[in-house]
Length: 486
Ligand code: SF4
Image (tube, rainbow, N blue to C red; front, side, top):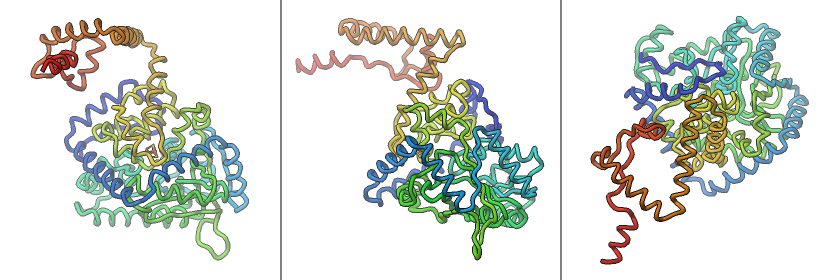
């Protein structure tokens, strides 16, 4: 099968400029282009249909934003309340400040349970902390049970999308992958491919000593973990093994059980266009007498950079994200360059914000620039995160951090250009003279109404990835004068 852009999971540094190289690879691959185009378009269209059928959608978004703001402003209170209630119902609470601590906690629980095999529901936090590698190093085998995650685990890649990890693959790709790794018969029929994965995974569910999940929401009022899914694998992972571990980013808190209705109505519609996902599980403590479920429930509350993000009163909006994937499906940049180009676990507009928060801006300073700032991400976000504003803030911080001499030079020349522009804009005669000179100058380089290449740095950066429309033959003022005469 085609080599997809590689993604080294668990790596905590992104080489500056890597996104350009990865993006170029994806743009040159017609197969990948079609996979991303058709999948994102389908999800985006389903979303439009779903929200058109829900009266008061805007009010729900506003309510969700207000609830998330309330949680973030009192996160210490809600975390303590959640922990107390979860423990009262028999759960064990663990706190992990870093990725390494979170991995160590899971490893110790697995060792304590004597689990050599783990079944995993899809959890982005586990990708974020590099859990699979940490478990494998300790001799514990993790098995992804979400179909998309199962596929990308076989292919050795990371998720290409928050909600649809194998979005970059077609069914033909999956068939080849299964033939290679599972030695199944080739088939392009989706139902048969699903049946193959199901057969392999059934056996894992039966054997695993521990099931691991994330959490879509954690309800402070009751100490409940809420999980949404379409495949039923999360129910299996959280109930069949004797021990269940839930990895929960501390931003997943919501205050009350009644608030869940707000988020559930937004999540499915915004992500996949579903009114509700097929299964919604509310887990409060381990099993009680007469119930199914695990004997032990452990909740690992993961910080890993979230508290530092909370300290920035503007940037903390990033933590409102409910991981619906809607902004990825809508983003014209994501649709073209796909998820792996972003170089880490989280991709798309929200990935361009989260990654610099969790890894440090110096490790991911290219990402905030991977946006056209068209603001469609803000329009589709169910919790109304002002993504373009936050991207601009990060861009500004990234520019301040520039240290390399050439980039410093670029910054100075950009500043000089901007100052010159501002000066001219305040003086009509200078603006008019400048545009006349530019029109004269462009005669040398414009062809058929377009400037395809500017040689002068840093302007050359503009035409590296796009053409520049040539200046119109007449200015607005000139045309206005002519119209007046007519
Ligand atoms: S930022 Fe908003 S649209 Fe994007 S994944 Fe998060 S909740 Fe969904």
